[in-house]
Image 1: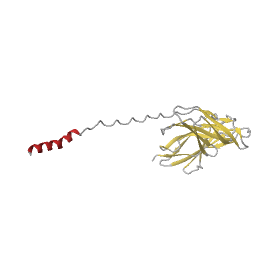
Image 2: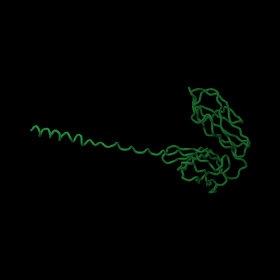
Image 3: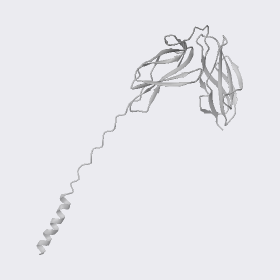
Image 4: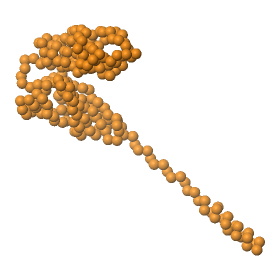
Length: 236
């Protein structure tokens, strides 16, 4: 009976050693290749600060304009951002091509830019912004483009004290330009703080305040345009 007992114990223990058989760990999956970020497109037409005369006349008030830009690297689609500089209305149109046709109001100033996008990444690249007049009925002299590229920038926080307000201006006819600067703590601003023939104006601002400012551009023929309302705040 002792011999039987010994063999029985050995039979119960052996499987513990023979069934361990752990294999190698599974190979981790290869990481997904990183999608390169797109690069910015270069605008071609309509030309910057020029009159667009190549549109297809649709009616007395509208024409069809073809926007063109260069292809950019690592890009799958393009979004054209269009702004009516007289009303402030904005729109966007997306295409896989490097051109797109849009219906525009005649005799109206616009700005446009192109954003490049790629599948598989959230990164984008923006072109420069161009401005143009869509041709309308013949006029002797065009109004200037509304002031753009402001400083302080929209939503920027700056220190109180004496600052230099700055902006850019352009005129299709090449007329001399002057500017009227409005600054207020309410929107729209109604207080004129100065007039200048340059693209800047010095003023003193208080601390911990939200300011709204706007520029009226006047050309030598008496035509004028009004910028959008810019906003910034000062630190406490």
